[in-house]
Image (cartoon, rainbow, N blue to C red; front, side, top):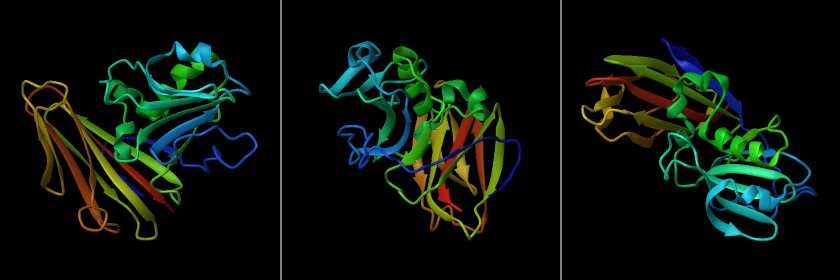
Length: 244
């Protein structure tokens, strides 16, 4: 992967997801609903009554697991990932399978992206801190792309205009190129473009989408992603899901 310009990069590995089909598998995890996910076997067991107090909304509750959302500072309700907690120790944060992987960019803490945090890892950590255990073995998986092995986050900010360049080698398998545009000051607005073509503009605070990997964001070619702001700060991010 070739990249140029001042960028913030975080690399995480998408590992095999053993939530089903094993002796220590989580119970009834909704794999058919999930897209990108972060997961950890936090402890041998979790007290669901204790975990329940961490949720601000509960979508599904059984004697074996809870699925809901937790409150995350700086996030809208829509940006909060779903969180699954099971009594056998699993914690999984995930976005629905119809959302781009770029939802994992934590714009509220942009400066800490190099430390490896994402919206999903932050949601998992909220539950770990509540019920105890460890997040040391946290991993990622994308149910939409089971053959993917890696994910990379690239982000740039500006108070006027800025850009970064990316080339994905032809030898890679590129499964998804998701983007996110963030402009916190809705009074003035900003824009973002790929190779000179605008893909997001206006005063909406957050936008997310996917580039076509055959036409818009093809392999073997250098691509330029630029961001501009009318006033104040503007941010743009790219999330690539791939295998080398």
